[in-house]
Image (cartoon, rainbow, N blue to C red; front, side, top):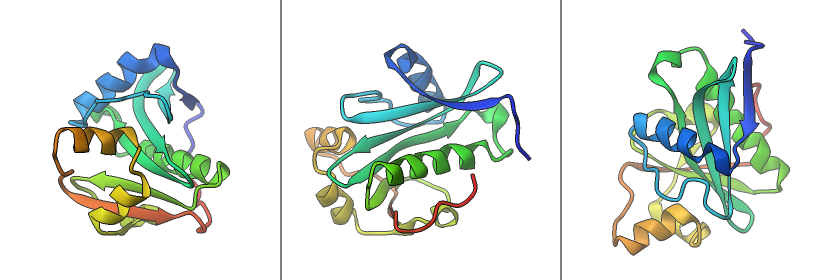
Length: 156
């Protein structure tokens, strides 16, 4: 079902509070949101923000940086639309892969496969999220994932 009142738009500096709030409410790290070298989007329904997602860009690869839908709007496929729009964008910029850290969920349904942490850290050493982990001498928790971008983008 397509909701014509839903739009995914590029986030600008004026959207930092919105992105931070959506991520915070979903329990996601908000450090470096909208930092240089990143692209973020806001998903809205009738002008009300319901979700946000970001990509941190490296050389030929991107790191999915948060994918969140507000609790009241979950379960209707909006998260899938948001993730697939980021995948499509990364493909369009010529990335060979998207990587991510996740503390839950089955990302296999989005075409992601589990990979060792060292792969993600090595592919995107200058991504803001990875720099933040290194600065705090921390390791991201959860599972590390990769989606090769030679796969056709499924319908969002």
